[in-house]
Structure formats: structure tokens, C-alpha cells
Amino acid sequence: ERVCHEKAAWYFKKIAASGKKIIVVPGNHDVLNGTAFSYKGDKRTRVETVTPAEFTEIYADCGFSEAVMKDPNSLSYVAEPVAGLWVLALDSCLYRDNPTDEHPITDGEFLPKTIEWIESALIEAAKMNKGVIACLHHGVVEHFEDERKDFPEYMVKDCVGAMMAAYNVKTVFTGHFHAQDISKKTWNGKTLYDIETGSLITAPCPIRKAKITASQTMEIDSVFVDSIKSMPDTFKEYSEKQLVKSFTSLLKPKLEKYKVNKKDAEVLAPQLAQAFITHYGGNEIKPAVLLDTKGTSLWSKFIISIKKSLVNNLYTDLPPRDNKLVIKLSAS
Image 1 (cartoon, helix red, strand yellow):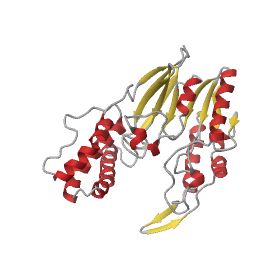
Image 2 (cartoon, helix red, strand yellow):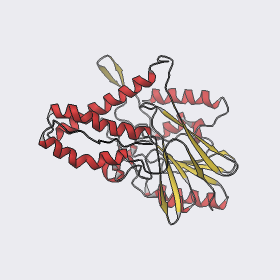
Image 3 (cartoon, rainbow, N blue to C red):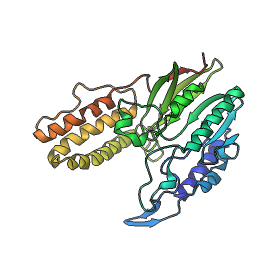
Image 4 (cartoon, rainbow, N blue to C red):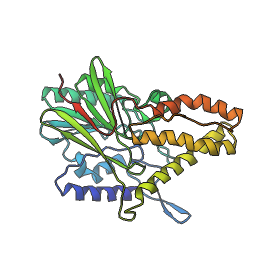
């Protein structure tokens, strides 16, 4: 909703007043959202969303007005928050194809011309000896095995990771899946770290801190919101319960779609939910028993056996560690 963007920009302006620079990239819900509504009781009323042009106007002071390069075919741009450091703020969303009255498209993909523009920016950065980090909404590197197969809509379709690594980009900041997870991939001896940060609307409500040192290392740290004004003592517990509730209510109908009976779905959905919740927190520790199917029907056991590899993958923490890490940025 436009009103939400305006409120966010108002908050960003307050943050910027303290001397901090804000760099904004769009997510898949942010532009031309066909489900922009206000709610009052049971009544739902359509309200104004934003166009790409309006997005840049609202967030003009959050990167767009000071961009050193802009892609004419998307909302991608290059910011230089400090001298010598370029941030590739990339637009991987497909809002141009969003249906009018339906949920916005979850998938991410760059236009071919935008891929050309990204490479041109990387070439220019190399010529000018600029350090480069990147950020976009969709994931670039898999954060668990078979993510691209099981959840393709949460990863950008184009293999821009290989191109970034080729031009000595070491880190890309992503989101979308709401997990607090860092993963890496190496192409031709060059490694790219995908630093995925969870959402503030889902537990554990994380914030990333990244410090670039004089010795050209990036020190990644994480903090977690466990208190808000209205819940000074109970917010952490509340947010965790809400996440369990949300995942369980989401997974029960999916199990029932596979003809798992309601009784078994009540037993299995919370266990499946726990795998996602554990991945959300990062630094996953695999439990002794992945899924306890005792007392469920043979059919339910069969369905769970099919999905067991996904659960195992969610519980398996790919290197490196997720919440605290030091990354060497120099090309050597």
C-alpha cells in the first residue's frame, strides 16, 4: 500500500537525520501490488499501491537521488555511500506482470538488458578500482541443498552469482525466504557469500550488522529484536508462538492436499514447521529424530518419507556459520 511506503520513508528520514545513509531495493510485495487493501473489522477496501516511478519518488532520499548509475529498464542502481565503495542495489522483482486482483508474483528474474547493465556497472567499478557489494531481494546462492529445486521462486532465476564472483564481488545481501542464513559458492576459484537476512515480521526478528575494516575484511554480526514498547517482556515469546502458529496453519492444508487425514496433519504439521523455524534462526542443529510418525497411518508415513529429504536439508546448516562471520574482501 502506498500509505505503508510513505510511512516507511518517514522512518528512514528520521534514521538518515542521524547521519546514516539508506539504500532501498524493492521486494516482491512492494510495487504494483494487486492486493493493496485497508482493513476495518471484516471490511476490506482497496487502496492505492505504487508504480515503479512512484517507488523512486517516495524513496528518492534512500539511494535513488544520489545514484551514480541507474538501469533504465528496472529499479536497479549503483550507490556510493562512502568513497571507494559501490553498492549494486538490484531490482529482481517481476511486478510488471503482477495480476490486478491477486497476490504479487513471488519469483525473481532479471531482464536481459538489466543483466547487461549489471555487467557494465561491474566493469566500470573495476576500471575505477571501486570495492563492490550487492543487494537484492531474491537469493543468489542456495542456502540449503535443493533449494532451487524445492523453492525456485525464492531464488533469482539468472546465475548472476557467477558473474558477480568473476568481477571479485565477495558479498551479496539478500532476503525473501525470511531465514537468517549465510551460504557461499565458488566459481573458478572465486567465492561469493550470500548473506540472507530474516524478516523483522517473523521470529527471530533479526538485524544484520556489517563492518568493513581497514584491513579489508567484513565483520558480520547479528542482533535480534526481543522487546518492543507494547511488549517489553513478552515479545520474544509472542513472536516465536506466532511463527509456529503461522507455519502450522500453512502446512496443515498442504498435508491434507496429499490426502493426509486431519488427525495426522495435526501431529505432523508442527514438526514440519519446526524444520522451517530452525532454519529461520540460522546455525541449525539437527534433532535426533527428524519427524516422529508414530501412530500415523501408512499413507501419512509414505507422504512424510517423500518429504523427509527436504526436512533434512532444512535442518542441515551449510557452511559458513550464519550469525557471526568474518569475510576477507581483498581479491587475493
